[in-house]
Image: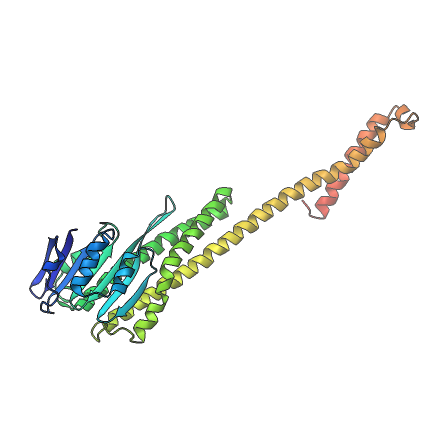
Length: 325
């Protein structure tokens, strides 16, 4: 396995690759921060070797390797582990993809784990390699913060895309409540529920940050983690709002569908009501009795049609007066 390494110190940021993680000395000067990227979780043996080399608790390693683990932020001994889900959303195909991401900090060592080689931290790389000042010279705590924040920021992109899609669905519902709109509403609702299930476990993190439960948050970085807590709360509130919004759209669609069904039933009932007396007349004069005085009348046939048409006109007028149609 090849590891991508960032060595960050006051002298600058140096990026290189290693095949043997044991070449990094965790006891090196704390003024140097190492950020190690692992782009695969399939080689459990290598990750366990890494854990042994850096003295990482086995419970944390199990959480890192468990790609179905729910998001959390946990501190054990002198290590802090964040489990998050990197989310990408394809509005065209209505597909939501999630990737298991783990960020572990132990002293001056920061390890990031992802399921695929996707470069989800490219913006952070640019900031620490090209920018000068705080982002390069700060402590490992601050680097850990901007790594967490970079993933949390992607949730806002997802929220913007989802909000646009919900509004478009709402507009299409108003203009043309076709059956495919109902399918789209269902797909949107399922996407929101799916993502909410992956993000909602983060709701306890802001409280833990504000109550000072994490020792790794120093006085200098507390303001940034407070801001991160605000972002998490805002994201969860937005997801709740989207869920209610789509639920309301779904109820409106069902109401419009029910109204349309009622209109169809009303039309059919009116036609049935009109033909009931006509069917009665046809049934009476269609019986095979020998003595039918009306059958001998010269005006019997025209009179039958006059009565039938008159009944239709009278019933339609009555329906209109009652505003049934």
